[in-house]
Length: 230
Length: 85
Image (cartoon, rainbow over all chains, first blue to last red; front, top):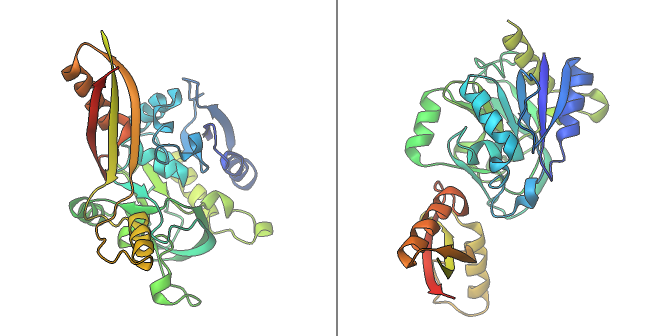
């Protein structure tokens, strides 16, 4: 399987994603330059983390008009899998691939820390290798991660099982402190209605190697492999 | 074609949590401006635009706001001024 990893000016997790796919997962990956118009036969598109266009105007607002995004949106409309991580989640929302928006953290602080998230739906093409309700640890690193949408949208996301990851308490954190950014309903990641676009603030691609102290992200890439290959 | 100078204000939608506005309000209260409430921090954009007339300039500005300059989920925009230059 081939992963296409988009590099925008200001992306900084594109190599992390590349390494997760090639070294941890053992699959093929290629970088897709933001000015290109060709997905190079990628089966899965990754919109990586970083600060595309310096987060000018709003995080992701300018990247969504990059030339490659026309092909990424067409790929998503055909049902092709798209994984948006952190800045990639912001871009996917701005591009209309996912509902809602990511706003400034309620604390106004950039938060860089390992956090606990609960797998709220393991019946997706991105999470089938997790257990339903499993608590996993993933790193976050963002200043604009507060997921926001109107109540009707939030209710619909909940009802359709589109809330995939939620910030959750663990043994070490007081229950009121586990949500790192003030995200509505503790949402950390959602899938599109069709299930082929996942956006999430935590970084699974930074949690695939025991050397770096975390491996809970690997199952996400494994899930993609299993589902798309099947 | 005429050239217009357009000013646009983009603010967080009322009712949504605005942590920047709250931080500024808290600071103003600390400074003794106890009567302050409803602080919202947004963006002010100024641009020059070639258009047929003022109505055309407003129409184009509205399109730019809806497409890029404001996020329809979380922000409201207002065209604050359109002037010939």
